[in-house]
Length: 214
Image (cartoon, rainbow, N blue to C red):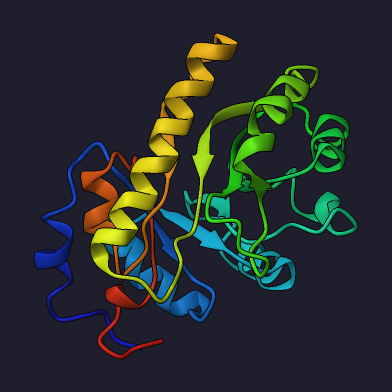
């Protein structure tokens, strides 16, 4: 798979303070090295089996590994000691496994189902306060911010409104609970510019990095 011919033109519009995580669900190890060679060193995987294979193949590279998909608790032990960031914390059971398996704190985004979609993972907005309170009992769970996915079939303006809703929620939780969350993982290839305009600090990019759609 070839890198997009205009990849540098696309990337130049992403501010330096925004972290690019390459979503590599459909990308093999060789193609990941192409991204690595142009300065993208953060990679996000959705599936445990793919992550473990790629992690082993690329363990000599200075890669920052992110797990961005739903992490089943029965598979979590295989992943938690190897990743740098988890984007999909959504249960106290998973938090307890992090606490048991990690030697050092793990940076975590709490995944919020901001649109209450039945097909999506994440906690409901109204459960966020209680969930964040409960997470304070786990010293190795370092909550850095919130993560979300937009409704697919909506306009860019509607997506922007959804992004702004998550940012507002983060600020409200910081004020209510005395937290210092500063990061928002939101925005993908179709809407990363709207996400950045709404306060995203991490964008998860896949097909826009390649010359053919994946």
